[in-house]
Amino acid sequence: MIRIAAVGDIHLGTDSPGTFAPCMAGVGDLADVLLVAGDLTQHGSVAEAEVVAGELVDAEVPVIAVLGNHDYHGDQPDQIVSVLADAGVRTLEGTGTVLPVGAVRLGVAGTKGFGGGFAGASGSDFGEPLMKTFIRHSKEVSAGLRTALDDLDCDVRVALTHYSPVPDTLAGERPEIFPFLGSYHLAEAVDAGRAHLALHGHAHAGTEKGRTAGGVPVRNVARPVIGRAFALYEVDEAACAPRGTAAAATDHVTVRPTAGRQPASSPERASSTTNLWRSR
Image 1 (cartoon, rainbow, N blue to C red):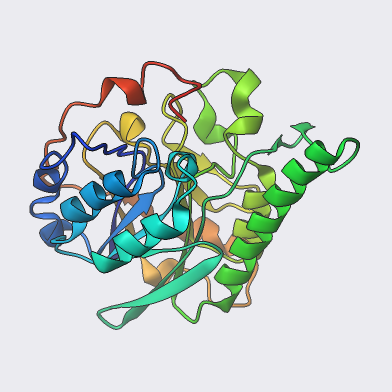
Image 2 (image 1 turned 135 degrees about the horizontal axis):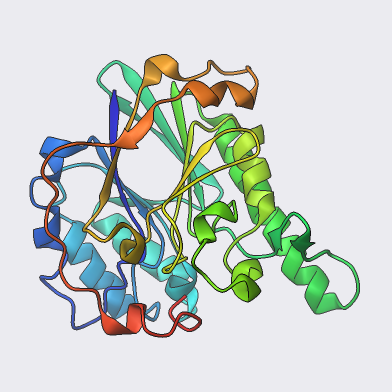
């Protein structure tokens, strides 16, 4: 059994030192890895990234992350990735990594992802150059996730994104902004890449549980959604479909909240929840 701690949208700022690390105390007793689904910072500054690094440097488990749209706002994503790397945090973008968990190999492939919408209400790369650029970027990052998943040599594959691959986990958000919260191209990558679990953030007012058309469980782990420092899931590797089988076989994967003590979370920063448009 692989135990995964996951959270997104922690939105740490320069006034946040000492607020998140205490929430992570004891995570090593509960999980084998911590996955962070983007929006680690408030405004994408290096100074904020240094705060994040300070909160995660002593984590009791390996930490794997993707960046979110907030982390790109300061136009310094490469510098943020470098600061996080110095603290031992592995940041993925169209790439993957494999961790040994006992005798099991856990593979995580990640991308920030992008918007575009979902079946029946999505954009297309037709018309104005800006619209074509928007949708083509969504397709490109999704293709990168598919390749990264396919390249993993592991027993269990997890897709980690910031934007949502399905509309299910956006329930509670205003439908008008769904195209800016995720894209069905990500779900196609998750299914084609034979992931066993998909985790994302971004939708603060969304819903935790969803599923792709191919049957892959999807979890929205944005901190305002899960309501605690992190969510805990167990993946039964014995139930996971072997590589090369149909994605529908993932219906037999056991993914459930882990019972036991939950570390108390610190109060949410007001700016991460009050304005649903700007907060993302």
